[in-house]
Amino acid sequence: MTARTAVAAVFGDPIEHSLSPIIHNAAFNAMGLDWVFVAHRVGAGHAADAVAAMRSLGLRGASVTMPLKHEIAGLVDELTPMASRLAAVNCLFWRDDTLVGDNTDGAGAVWAVERHLGVSIAGARVVVCGAGGAARAVISAVAEAGAAEVVVVNRSTDRANSAASLAGGVGRVAGLDELAGGDFAGAFDIAINATSLGMIDGPKGVPLDLTHGCPGTVMDLIYHPLETEWLLAARTAGARVANGVPMLVGQAAVAFERWTGQSAPVESMLGAVHSELAS
Ligand code: NDP
Image (cartoon, rainbow, N blue to C red; front, side, top):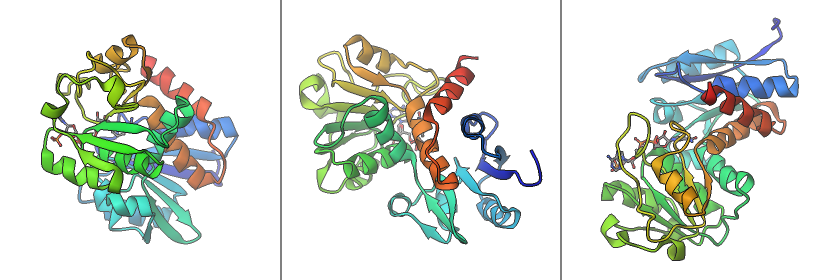
């Protein structure tokens, strides 16, 4: 590193286990860029300090994680349409002197399905389990990618309604009772888990019972563990599956491109995450 090294960072709390430094430093190295990526612990209520620091220290880009995604959305000069729709920002980048807030989580999910798994979303019938921040990003993005139908299943109905509305005319809510015992091989092309069910130290259980028929493509946003009980069931049923790693890399790849203007070295980024999670 020299006095000319460009600095990018991630803001959030907790931040010690963030994979963003691993992913982005691997990408900078693979591309031979004189950039470095660091993590800063920034707690709730301190997003304005982080944005001020970004401006005064000349950070070239930033990722934003919990608990700041909503707070920071009100502090940038401009929001992308996706960040505005979600009222949540996970990526800060500069357009000349304008600080732009974007949300690349949904684009990461679309990348994971279309580019990593090689499955087209256009015309697909998609079921998304969950209605939290990650689910909202996924629902918006798969609708924008041309899904024929986006069915949202969630424990709390009010959050499900709000999330499904992000898919516009192709979104609807289905109750767990309505889906119980369903043959999802016939009903859906793609199933995505965006709940925390199955996460290490998270709630136990599966988001949707796949024993009566499994969609051809199944993605679980969780990557701790690398394979949840639900993803194992889908893989055993013969589905094409992805855990949360490709989406994580996909959202980072879009951020990398916003910051550097160059195509992201996704294979290096995937390799870095896999080595880290295997260690
Ligand atoms: P939120 O807290 O915003 O949402 C949690 C979701 O899980 C809600 O839909 C919630 O339902 C549901 N849920 C939680 N506990 C239960 C339970 N006991 N039974 C049924 N449903 C439950 O979290 P996020 O949206 O930020 O994250 C969701 C998951 O996505 C996490 O596992 C996270 O690790 C993963 N993720 C992965 C990313 C990636 O790049 N791979 C990126 C971001 C997140 P309700 O609305 O009823 O409370």
